[in-house]
Amino acid sequence: MKEMKIAKNELVSFLDSLISEYKVFAPVKRDGFVVFQEIYSGSEALLVYANSKKPPKEILFPQSEVLFTYRLGGEGLGIEEPTFKDKQMVIFGIRPCDAKSLVILDDIFNSQVYKDVYYIAKREKTLVIAIGCNRPSSTCFCTSLGGGPFSPDGSDLLLVDIDHEYVVQAVTEKGKQFLKKHSEFKKVEEHSLSLMRSVIETAGVLIKSKVETGEIKKKLDVMFDDPFWDWLHEKCLDCAVCTYLCPTCHCFDITDEALDQRGERVRIWDSCAFPMFTLEASGVNPRPTSKERTRQRIMHKFKYFVDNHDMAACVGCGRCIKECPVNLDIRTVLNSILNR
Ligand code: SF4
Ligand code: SF4
Image (cartoon, rainbow, N blue to C red):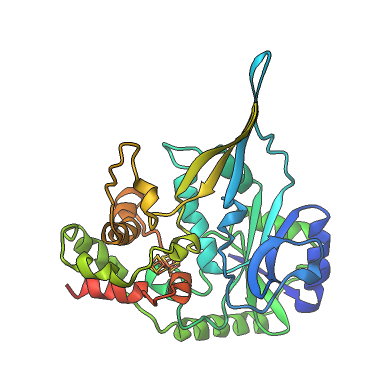
């Protein structure tokens, strides 16, 4: 891995220079929450924050996305598809857990069997610049999922905050080429590298939550009919906050928004927590109560996804723990499964 450095007081002008060439997304404060949005000035980017309320997945997989528009006229049906002519994009300031979630989303939307042109068009144009977490939150458990506060997975560049400057690690070839192109990145001295190692070590120790997730699948393999699910769901409100805010959840619905002879086919986020998600046209619902839906959420992330993709669909970001209105803590759920 090749390292360079950038001074903190050069970061705003660096982002300003990027904005002229790329569509730049960064964490910003909006209505009291940290979210990822396109920025038009480097000074808009928030550099000190724990993590965003909403995951940055919506940059590549928007909450609502027009797939195509259509019109019925005298000459029959006309369809207008997107041209994918957007500029190259940079996601700046993403946390390592969310960068790792892009590896999971890549495996879903750009797999051997399924190619999602809408996702792929954006992903191929995107450079990912992560900033590691010097002070992880009490709800973070990324190390239990093979990640860490400075894990490079899913990033092209990883920044390590060593106070007055960032040490920049080039993770991919794309990242290396980007560093070569920008003169703001300077040669790094051994003293800065030593500070970087110490920051990384300290942050790892600060992650106190641990779950032996490697053992979970074996347990879940034989738990479909376990009475555990009878009570687990009791306090769940089916609000779907845990799935909407999860960086790896990717269920969607497709609907037509039509008026007269024109319309749009729109993809919108959906959730396995909602009863309507599996309601069939016949009126039958294979997941009629919260019990089946809660089981599905856990089974999908830690059994079915592992079966199909060889990894869990969770990066330990802790959003579902922080935001669940009834404190249904996924770490407690997983530890209860391990103890059965
Ligand atoms: S956030 Fe909590 S209450 Fe809402 S659906 Fe998820 S587990 Fe249930
Ligand atoms: S399940 Fe919870 S902790 Fe895991 S990635 Fe999703 S929101 Fe984060």
